[in-house]
Length: 187
Length: 242
Image (tube, rainbow over all chains, first blue to last red; front, side, top):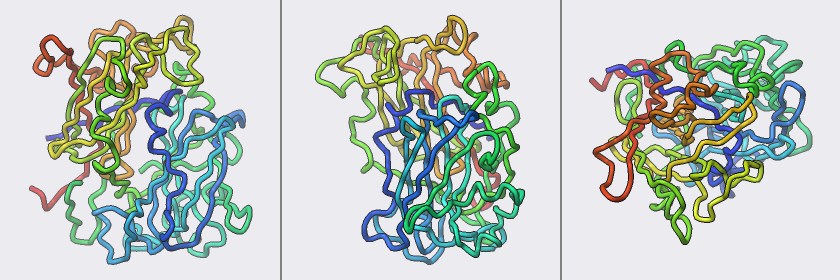
């Protein structure tokens, strides 16, 4: 039996009504091990204007590089209560901020380890299908050997790597169009 | 969550690519707001890794048992035509997607959302918030009770009105199965003029966004029913599961 996936449609301007109940800005509760960071940025349209009716979702592994998912069969420790999911609506200026722990490395194609990263889905009014991107970490040597970063034209790789703003604060923005347009993936 | 068996090399089977024409483009000029919000550079084609083949897991503990009934969230009953919306969540292989979170939101019966940016001159209903959620059962079934949402104007083009619709958000078993869509109602004359509905070029895929009147689940003296099945991306191969 073979079916085609249902068609995607926009979340529209009133996405908050249905999605706010699951807003999660603190992805790693107390007791979850790892280097704690805040990540903040803005979702910007083609005119550099903040998108106020947008939403960012995060999916990530814990500091050992283990996903809270039954298909992750790695023999690594998983803290109880760690889900690894974040949902952050943008504010009136298109800004978003969340806190989490830096994830560990997880296996990639052919067993090559990936550099630490967060997986990101971006939703908004004016977008009929969500976008997929990633956040990598600054000062991380393994970025140079990451199998997905290697697929990105070198001049555009920086759009996926957060910048250090303060000791425990990283800056990472989503730029939908134009100069420094964020890299989005097609999986 | 489906039990999955890794292939011999220890890698999980990948998800299929979307069939051409069944998904909208990011740049779709008839929906004006896409113009400043669509990426202009090509997407980077990337392999599916453990990061995308997994995704957040939700359970019954995340929701309240009454969250599926949008008519019972306030002291009184909302104004409007009571409806039952139910269906199954399947993958492209026709397999049920069990125990997955389904979120819905919609306008009230007069076409108004209780949202600070909705300025449409139609009445709010103090007994209707318009949001619900549920978890599919072991066979992938879900069921909501609500009221039929009203059509409402928007400013995309002259005299633009959205057809009546309910927003659906689903996770499925992986980051790659995440999906947000809209359910429409059969016979709605506004569908023909709606850029969002018409952004799907494949006619069959487009038509599947329209729910079907469901006589069997229509409850005598109580509510009309509509059926809306949703298909999420499926895995390419499931060698151990024949």
